[in-house]
Each structure stands twice: as C-alpha cells, then as structure tokens.
Length: 349
Image (cartoon, rainbow, N blue to C red; front, side):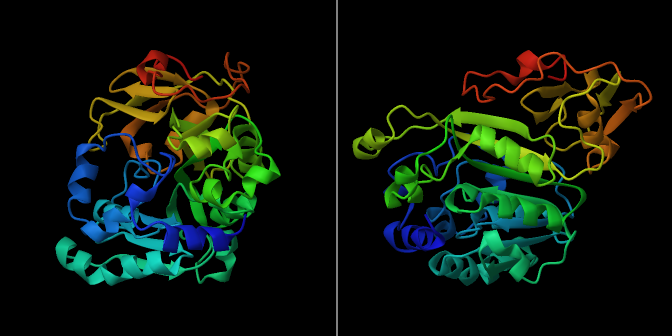
C-alpha cells in the first residue's frame, strides 16, 4: 500500500477523528499536566484533525531541536514547540497537502499565543528524508505518531532518522504493531491501511529492522492492545492481535544487542521537571529518586551519554563483565494495560 492511499484517507476520507473506525489512531492515555497545559494552547481545528496513537513528548526537552515525522495537522508539533521553548525548534514533515494546509494556516496564531515562533512544516515523504534540506546530525530528538505503519519502506525511515540524529539523540515514537506478519492481501486493503492496521509491523521484524538501521537496543516505553470496533474491519483480521506501542531508540556508540551486566548502577537525583519522584526510562526501568538502581551497560550509556546525564549519579564502568542480565529474551514484549512498571523497578530486565 503506497503513500497515495494515506494522502487520500487522511486528506479526503477523514474529516475528523470522529470518522475513525478503530482506536489505532487514537490516544487512550490521559496526558500529564504539562501536556494538558500545552494542548490548551493548540488551535481547535488542529486538534480536531489529530490522528495519533500515543503521546510523543519525552522528558528534558528545553532547547531541543525536534523533527516530527508525519506531523499531520500539527498538534504534536505545536505541543512540543511550547516544551522546547524559544531556544528550541520543531520541524514537521508530512506528505498530505490538506493536513499541511491546516498546520501552516495556524502558524501565526500559535506564534502569537506562545510569544515566539519556532515551528516550520515541510512537504515530504518520510521514506525519502534525504530529498529534504535537512542537515545530518542536526536533531536531538525525532518523534513520530502512528505514521511509520503507513509507509512501505519502513527501514528507509529508520536509516534516515539515524542519519539526521545527533550522537546521543533518540527517536521517540508511537506506532502500531502486530503479533504476526500481515499477509499481502490485507496490506493492500485501503481502509485497514488508512486505519493504521494493515501496515503494522510484526514486532519481531521491527526489532530486527531497528537494529540493522543502527539502533541496537530498542526500548519499549508503553503499550496497549487495540480495539477494532467496526465489525466489518474486525472480521478481516480475525486471529491477529494488534498493539499501540511507544518505543525509544537511541543513537549511541557502544550499545550492545543484549543487556550485558558490568556491575553498574545509577542514582536518580529527582531533578527532571514533572518527574521528581521517579523516572521511567522504559517499561523495565522505573527508577525512584535517591535509590541505587542496578543497570546494564546499555542503560548506563542511555543515561550517561545523553541529555539525561546531569540528572543522575553514575556508579561503575565497563572494566569487568558479569554476563547477561537474567530474563533478557526475545518473546513478545507487549503486555497491555495491566502491566505495572513499578513491579519491575528493582532490576534491569
């Protein structure tokens, strides 16, 4: 299924989020206070044309340079613009003219509302980011919200994202995944594709592609099972399970494909605004303030060699290896809403 179907579905078929037939392109979780405050400053037409499946606002964004892949009507871009502040910048890329028109039409309105202008939108295909005038290694963070499933060459997106990220930067994105590979006939269904279902990657293929594209240790932040409410669409995908999931992929030298134990630990200072009591790097690392928390070498680097470093104390180095952390396996990672991140707060994996 190609980009023309996405442009037609999001530019002409859908006129608002109420037209969706599944909850794949909906955000189920309640946003934290800082996001709710920022959303209140986004134009209502922009929010009415929003089709994301998660929150793509990671921590420590002040002054950051962020690229939003598949920025749509601009909701995430305008939220992030407030969080990075006047010293940061947001670049949105989208291929659907109708969505870009909405995003661009309200640029001045948002600049007046925020008191500064730090957002621009570019027309482009996220599979061919090399055709845009974007400087390699120029972004701290790349976000994407339920869009990568819509493109055919998903590996091209991750390769280009790796090229555009600074060292120590990350992709923080939400998307749709399946518990098995989607057959070609379903991939070519225009409604299932437009609803972000039939373009979903089998989670094992995503893990492999991410690693091949320079992200050795994908980290699952959160996930939830998807509901397909429309009986016609549900009948087409009987036997499949779909998940909305948020991942973070770091561009870092030294990351290994497994969680290796070097006897390291970190202590969180509680200094990230909005996360004074604990910091969740992912769904296996719920790090309480002041607690000495054992970590693998990869996690140590993800905190030590990134924008998070000033918020942690670091114990240990890489001088001695103790083997792999128990439980670092390859079974399906998604658990659904019953998962409790605090239940895994005492070990790396």
